[in-house]
Length: 504
Image (cartoon, rainbow, N blue to C red; front, top):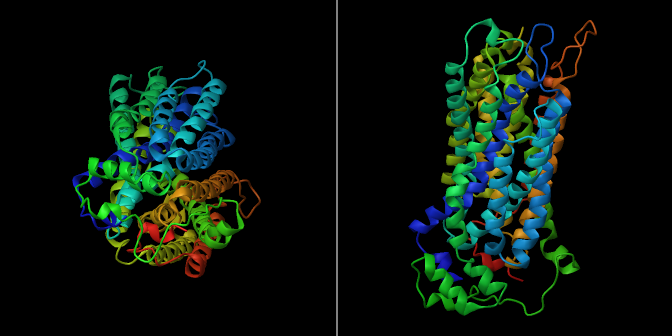
C-alpha cells in the first residue's frame, strides 16, 4: 500500500514502538533478573557446603532457564500461526495478558521448600515463555506493516531495542530491592551464613513481580490498537475497512490508500498453503535462511548471556564474605554496567545503520567481528584468566561481543522475517524462524551449564569451569559459520522494498 510506504514518521510510529516492544521488554527483564534471583534462592533454600553459601544445583538452574525457552518455542509457533489465521490484533492482547499473569505468578510458589520453589518457577516460566514467544512475531509484523519503506528496518529494530531497556531496568530494580533489604537486615557474620534472613525470601519475589508493571500499563493501549491495514486489505480482502483503520492512527493521503499493490504487480487469486510446493519453491529458501541465522545467533547470544556471572566473578568478593543481598546487588550492578556500555549502544547502532548499510551487511559484519573477538578471548585466555582473576581487557572483549551481537544478528534476525514473506504467512514464518532460534538458545544454555561444572586440571583433578575456554572456541566457530551462511543465503534486497513485493 503506497500510502503506508510513503508516510512520514509520525508520533504513532514511536508510540507503537513502546506498545509493541513491551513484551520484549518483559522478556529481557525476566531473562536477566533470573540471574541474581537464582543466587538468592540458592542461599535461602540450599545448605552451605565447605564454608560457602548454598547454590541452586546446575541441573535445576538449567531447568529454570530452559523452561522459559521451551515455552517461547511453543508460543512462537502457536501465536505465529494464529496471527495469520485470525488476525494480529485479536491475539495481541492475549499474549501480553499471559506475560503479565505468568510473570506475576513467578513470584509465588506452592510451599516454602527448594523443590516446590524451583518447580513453581519452571511451571510459570514456561507459560511466561509462551506469552513472550507469541509476542515476537506479532510485535515485529505489526510494526513492519505500519512502517514506511524508508525507515521500516529502524522502526522494527526500535521495537526489539526495548529488550535493552528491559535488561537495564531489571538490574536497577534488583539493585534497589537488594539495597533496601540489606539496610533492613542485621549486620555481621550471622547475616551471611548459614542462611540469609527470612526477608530474603520476599526480596526475590518482589524483583520478579515488578517486571509486570510496565506491561500492565500498556495493556489498554495494545487492546485499542487497530488491526494492521495490510492484514485487513491483503488477507481479509476488506479495503474499505483497511482505509478506516489506517486513518485511525496515521495522517496519510486517502487517495493513495486505494492502491493496494505496487505498480506492475497484482495479488494472485489462487491461494496456496504454507506446506505447498509453491510456498517451498518461492519462500522456502528465505525461511530456511532466517531460521538458520537465528539458530546460530541464539546459540552464541544465550551462552554469552549466561556466561556473565562467570566472566566478571573476579571483580566480586567471594560469596562467603558478603550477604546474599550484597552478592545479588553486585551481580545486578555488572548487568547494569554492561547494558549501558554495550547492550543499549549496540541496539542504537543497529537502528542507525540498518536502513543504510542493510540487514545482510551488518549481520555478516557483526558475525565476523564476534567470531574474531571470541577467538581473541580464546588465545588470551591463559594470560588474562589466572587464579580466578580476569583482566579488564577480557571484560572489554566480552562487552564487544554483546555490542556487535545487538548491532547485528540479534536485531537483523528479528527484522528480516517480518518483511520477507506474504502477509498471510508473515507471523507464521516469523514464529518458525524465532522457534529455530530458541532451540539454539536451549542448546547453548544447557551446553554452557554443563561446561561450567566440568573440566580437569593437568593433574586430572576436577576443576569446575575449566572447560570455558573450549566453549569459547565453539562459539567462535558458530559465528564464523554465521558469516558464511549470511554471505551465501541471507537476502540483501529488503532495504526500501515494499512489503507487497512479496505478495504472490
